[in-house]
View 1 (cartoon, rainbow, N blue to C red):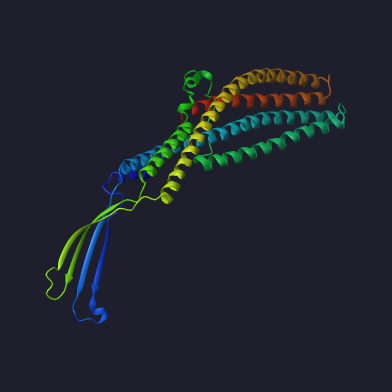
View 2: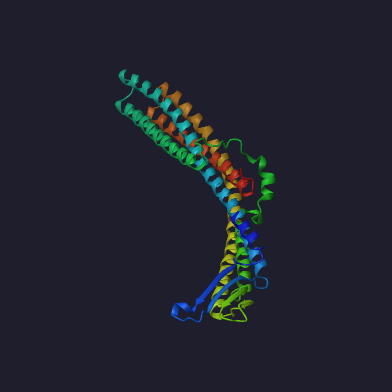
Length: 359
């Protein structure tokens, strides 16, 4: 809004406001009795140099585009931050759910082991191992809950609500149109760098057209009061033209030249970074899909093995420690699967954000 107002102000007739000056002289102050008194008033306005007004307007319009692209980049940054918090929170939620299930199973196992201990069927070492495993899972569960609450608090400070967005509805069905939209030229960060370059070039144009201070044009009205004076009132025109100076112009222009050079560098770096980021996203999506497939198979077989060993322990075929190890392996596999699933969905969501579909 401020840049738009500056562009409107650059369309005015004069680059600055008028200057009003006055003069009063009287010989009575020095003790003279001639009666000579002079009143003089002047008003002058600065003038645009050739091309300076249009260059100033273009610079303000370039500032407006930079501000608009900065807003888009900020929205993208907030959306990515929310996505990162959502991904981490979703992984923790799935981990908490798995840990709660395992904690309940271990609770029942500990009761069975305790009864078997009283009956003399297992050793005290087996009971201690069961208690240790249960306490370890419960301690990890408490830590996970605390971390999830911290993420919810951070999410609330960012968005005003602590509700985790649901990533379960994001899958590969929307990747077709999204993949074709992943063009670095459409990325808000590249657009911001390019608009900043145009802004620097516009400022350079203003400096080139401001090769001297603005001239001014004014009107002077003078009244002289003197005994029997034939001229008591005069009106005239004043025109001031400050001359150019290299001591003023060269540093001003070179400053803008350096700004253009930095902006060109930023555009090149932005293109390279965005292309590299898009390449990483595609590779991460492919890798996360493969990891998810392996994690799914690992979870299925680990659950089956834990269930089989649970039955084997209950009939006394294996010691309880073997079952506890299998249950720990199944828990780890479930957590890996949950994390792989969230990573894949978060990657797809990030690609959707990069394509410009920002909520």
